Structure formats: C-alpha cells, structure tokens
Length: 304
Image (cartoon, rainbow, N blue to C red; front, side, top):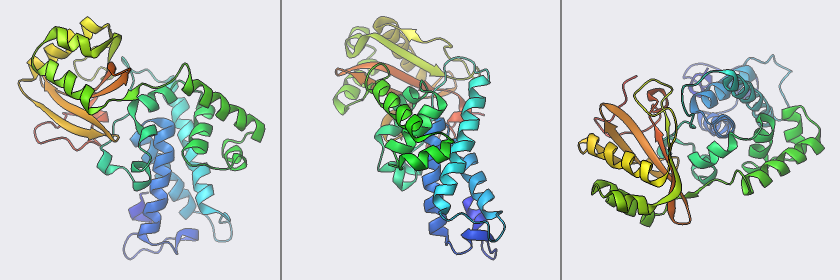
C-alpha cells in the first residue's frame, strides 16, 4: 500500500490515520523513506518498508492505535529495514555492491536538507557497520531520536544502544572515514583531462591508490573487480570516454555532481570521492535495476 492509497479520493482510511490529509501522510512517508534509505542504502527497500509500515498502521483495529503513531511507524520501518539488510547480506551479488543512487530532486525535503550523509561514499561506509549499529547511528545522528526510543525500536537496552552509536561514530571518524565531496575545481580538472584523452593529466588528478568501483550485478558488461592504482584507473577512464562517442551528460545524484555515460550500449553513472584534493574513488553505477530513480537525459535510459 502506498501513501496515495492510504488517502485515495473517496476512500476513508481506517484507524489512526483517518484524520490525516495527503500532505501529512506524505510528510510521514518521507521521513520513513529517509530512515529506510539510510539503513539499507537501497531506495526500493526503503519504499517497501515505509509502505508496509503505513499499511500495518491503517490495518490496526480501533482502540489499538499507538499513542505516538510516528514513533510506532519509525520502529516498524526500522525493523523491516533491518530484516531486508540481513537478508541481503546472505544473498549472492555479482561483483561490487554500491548503494542505489537517487536523483536529488526526487528525495523528500527532509533528506535534501541533510545531503551529506546521503552521499554514496557515506552510505557505503555505513555498509561496514553491523545492522543494529548502523540503525542506531542513523536514528540518533540523522533524526536525533532519544536513546530510549531507539532502544525500543531495536529491542535493546539503552546502554547497548549508546555503545553502538559511540562505536559507529568512532569508526566513521577513523578507519571507515568516508572520502570527501568532490569540489568543482577537482571535477573540472578530471573531466577536462579525461575528455582531452590526456593520460598523464588524468593520473595527476588521482591518488596513487585510486579505485574504480563498478556495480553491475553481472547484468551488463562491467569490471567485477575494482580497478586499482592511478595509471590503471586513468587508462580505464580515458578509454571509457573514447568509447562513449560523446554520450556524456552531467546529472545530480544524492546531492552531488555525477556524469551519465553511455559506453558500448551500457549506461553508467559515475560519481567521484576525494582525499586531499585528489580523486580517490570513482563509483560507476551500471546495474540497470538501480538506475530507475534517476532523471537521466533522453537517450541515456538503461535497458532493464
């Protein structure tokens, strides 16, 4: 059930949401999407969890409604997302896995205002945290929920939740510290070098340990292992640009600059991450199933 179905014209939603108008439902759903996307890194999982939580609330019998519906919905959404996250950990995925990119304009307003922790590099760092640790950190840092409320959502003791949040914060500041957002100057340097086919200038923009990470799940032709090292990465980027035949266009993804590229019939969306003013990661989103929430230019639509 979607938010639209909860308040569909001519339909009176049962239970505690009967008095909510469309804007209120959309606001609550937007918050749940924010929780789900940060926990799972996958927009489809976030949507499924948010809509299922709303459907469960609608289905409650009169008199059994929670005193705080939004807190209840957050708890249900969090638990559903944790189920999906744990299930995904057990599933086979071909090659590297990257969080699903989302067009910035499609994000709910509360997420647009907090763009930094929606960057692919940050969501990817979250992947290295344990599921409960990740959920606790998201609920505390992104939504400033009280520890007691988080503990209830995760069915854990408050001291345990405090420990999870503290440990996650420390790891994200040290060994899991995400690369920085790419500045316009760095983006321009790399793009100009690659478009010019200048291998040495491209190398100069990269860190010595630069990596190209491609997410395709084996559905399209893409590297299944990371390309490592400035020279190898530079050669790959220059060659991919040559093969694009000019099919390159800027797009905005998760609040960051990105490039849509069509090479050998495969649509890829490339994002950059930086350390000390040099590009250290190039993330290539190539899995067509993960490119459906992007506003790509005409002619750049992926084939599912």
